[in-house]
Image 1 (cartoon, rainbow, N blue to C red):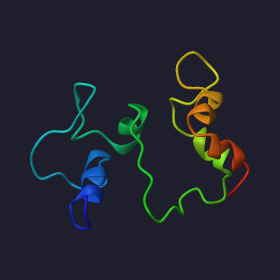
Image 2 (cartoon, rainbow, N blue to C red):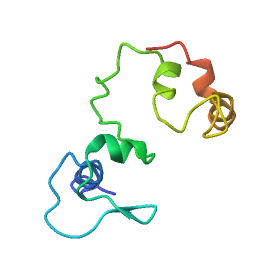
Image 3 (cartoon, rainbow, N blue to C red):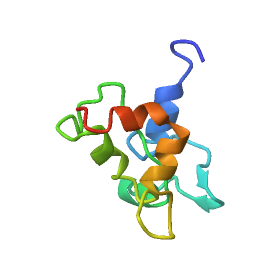
Length: 96
């Protein structure tokens, strides 16, 4: 969408970073409008603000390993699967 369309505000509301005034936010059928941010993240929703300064000291691969669905177990995607989808990330895995 164009500038001012509300993309950032919508994402911030989903993450619980902006107070939602009315309506409903459901994640996989579960009402999430009053969930704390960490519980929204545990449900697999992530938000990377434009500023990109939150985890700037981590490498690209370390940042990819932060979400709960990226793992070395059967529970989520493996880092290799992510690299298959986005080969340029593998080339930049040690970049900050």
